[in-house]
Length: 321
Image (cartoon, rainbow, N blue to C red):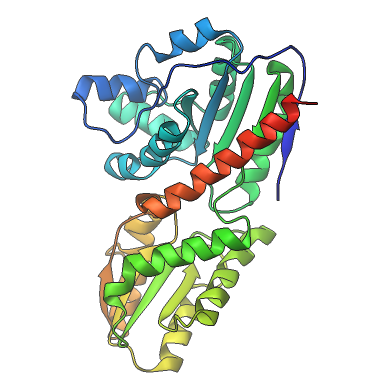
């Protein structure tokens, strides 16, 4: 579902803006810490944007994670990919989870903006046009909340455009399917089940999981299974499908999430009694856990860049109105 949020309050001019990006590039520890403290923007970059008066910025919004190393190779990698494509726009960061924001501040001394803080900061810096690109997997409750928050701040900018989540159209599904299959092809030996664990939601968008399962089956990937932690299909459904097939000795578990965070490390791969790993091992399967988020796959990052491009195009269309 596409949402465009616009409010024309000033004659914004799309000018050249200094490139800004805090990604996975190696850099001194203090500089990296400063970049994180600035919400993903390296020191000094904001001044160039303020001087541009009325430029365009891209705000990448993620749920967030307290797993620093995985953040670098997923969220920051996505931000970096966007920055490489749009070198004339500043790329900023915001997290939607206040719990994670607070934890990073208290534990690591890192300051990452909430969405409201990022929007207020962008307005104070004189940003005229804002593209907001979420790293959400689907158009669920969090995406709706983000859309509402942007609607509430329309008056602060000349134009605001919200990009689409990862799985938005048939082409997205096909690209993600191809990406995860290629990444796990080495395990597909006919006796191994490759199972992806999604988060799940009570929103209607939960259908993305069954939709992906159907596409995998239609494409002939019979050893791939998808379940969720907090919705349907659940682990019981996955286990029933494995048992019905009756050929598997090994199960590979991998998160169908942008980041391999708490759910992947505990609910999927943890030693807790009710983790997917523990339950499957008790059923006699050899279990291999791959703690890598979707954001680590270059082809998946490319999809986010394409969604930013589509949002930029909509911004251009608005400019001509």
